Amino acid sequence: MAKITEKITDLINPTLEDMGYELVGVEYVASGKHSTLRIFIDTDQGIGIEDCEKVSHQLSAIFDVEDPIASQYNLEVSSPGIERPLFHIGHYQRFLGNDVALRLVRPIEGQRKFKGAIGSVSEVNNTIELVTELGPITLDIDMIEKANLVADF
Image 1: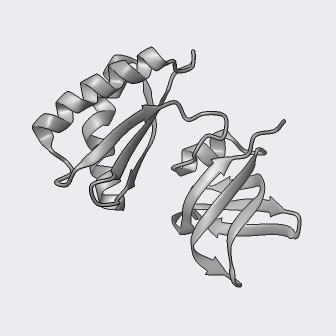
Image 2: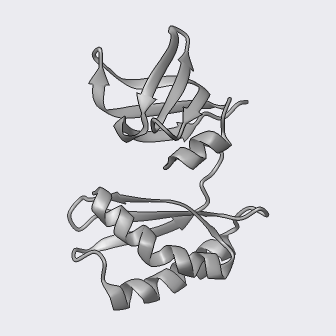
């Protein structure tokens, strides 16, 4: 899966930047004819439905020509939302101190899901420290399958 998302990211990022959007991330969920390609975009002013429509139209034209995914899929373009997904180390740095919920690729001591605040980020080691109720835990970014900010209501 990672190869597809990296390929899509490299393909669309220049176009999105030219259009004035930040590419937050790309998710691809393979499920036969019901596969989904999600593109998360943002701007300093936020994202409206018109932005999503404009980007979807532009990306559809690119995908029709480049055909980066051989099988059938649905394209979804959206804002990252209040429980924003975190895709790379820069996102963890940007939201240092915020609460996150994450799921690991493989369990650590039998646990795959964690919740806590981002305590620190190390680009050198490619790790984050997650401060949980049970204490801090250091996680390699590559071990994180999915991470989202937790809404603070």
